[in-house]
Image (cartoon, rainbow, N blue to C red):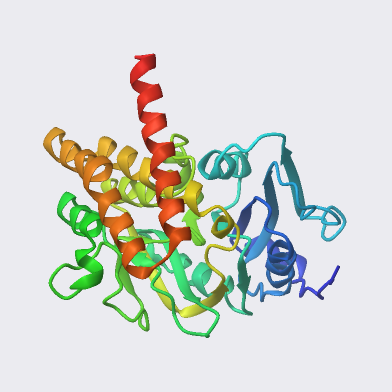
Length: 327
């Protein structure tokens, strides 16, 4: 495996530097994980110290964890025998941290030289003490900024999304995803996605970590909203960047990915919305959106998308029926 050279700061400089614990949740990430680690170890650490790198493996079967133990002394491997889900795995990786910051990093990312030093330096500035979460510009395969920030969702924006209006008429029905903004400048936002999620450890502990009821998706959005409720802001720092494949591992399980996303959305609305709004989201999710998605698959002439949609909603209906039966 590639062993990059790492710049080590003098010992007295390191003791003054803010420390970061990096948490990477792996599930069959294959070569992405090795590339991510290589870029992390090669990143500029001026003004920041990587205290430890915790890799939580959620029962991978692809051998992606092999050969990592001796790569760097700061790497700690935790191999789960079952898939705990993303939120629970992140919390496990952050347990017992004493670092100033926690960086939750997707294995399908590759850091650039200043991907870590710039956001930490930004967060360390006294004027930014009210910023609890920082994300950076994520570039896609074409080298273009991906739309990685979002507004806090409302019942109206979710219904627009269920009906496909935010995609058909984006100017009139803006999505909670900030697709209307080019992500070329830095600004405060409601939410930065969890592919690169830099958090003050004290804030993470104050919120009790991620809500583990979210198995996959929306746990980072829920965290951002809870942090906002405590008066902390999220910031998108365009001056720093990293590559992000996006869907690197979950792209292979599209039906189950749809199921997890729908279930997490229902959980989010149940946690943060009022009774009427929760009902509207549930009715839209169970009764309206599947018809819209299936119709879209037919119009596209995509049998695969049609089958995946049926399968994803089938899992959602089965889970809802099981939950009602257990009550």
